[in-house]
Structures are given as structure tokens and as C-alpha cells.
Image: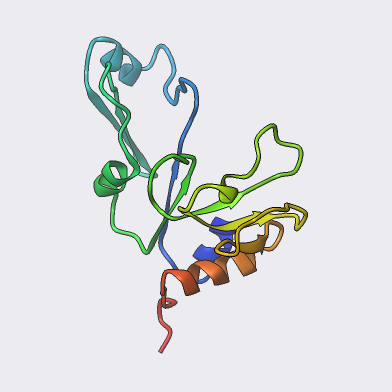
Amino acid sequence: RLVTEITARGYRVATVKHAHHAFEIDREGTDSFRHRSAGAGEVAIVSGMRWALMHELRGDDEPSTRELVARMSPVDLVLVEGFKHEDHEKIEVYRQGLDEPPLARDDPTVIALADDGTTTGLPDRVQRLDAHDPVAVADFIEQRWGLARPGAA
């Protein structure tokens, strides 16, 4: 919902999603799968509708968000999900009932917490946002990072 809200405001948005497990966007039997299986370090799949670049780490370290963003096309805003231990500023989305307390309590890189309004013990430095109000979260992002809507005078 947040991506929908921000793109409706005219911003070009990219996202980076961290997966905590091995994931597969290719499938056995395709040429691209065979290329990767044969040892290709990168495989691009291209059509008239979209393209994707798969990079095999083959034992190398997972890239940081900065490294990933440096490889992406220019956009107005990059939204990152995961990568909670990196040092960029974060808006934490917290749901009650999780096994862990919110990061916002102890992590100074968390500048806002989006939840249902019931999380307690937050430091004064943390702005509370309504997790069910993407308009308010988008407003906060615009204000915090000084974004100007495309086409606005």
C-alpha cells in the first residue's frame, strides 16, 4: 500500500527486499537456469515487458544496501525491507505478538515506528506512525527526506 501511495504521488520508486532463505526466481529446465547451473556468475533475462538480472554469490558475502542501490537505476526513493542491522535510517513496522521487542527501543537508526498504536516504551526520538495509514507514512517520508513531488511548483 505504501508503494502504491508514493507512486501515485508521481515518484519513481524502487524496492529492495531481503530474504532470509534461499529463494528461486528461475526454474529448472529453462536456459537461464542451465546457464547459472553451468557456472555463469550473472544471467540476464530480457523480454519486451521486463528484464531481470540474477547474480550468483557463489560464496561471496551478501551485498549491503548501499552496494545494491549503487547498481540500481536512478529513482526518487528506494524503500528497503529487511537489512535491519545496517546503519541507514529506518521506519520499523511492528506487529504486536512478535517474539522480539521492537528494534526502535534500542536502535538509534530507527527514527519511526509504524504499528497499531499499542507499542509501549518507545524513546522520544521515535516518531509513531499508524501502520494502517499509508498516506500518513508517505507524508512522513516526504517531510523527513525533503522530497518534492514531481511536477509541483
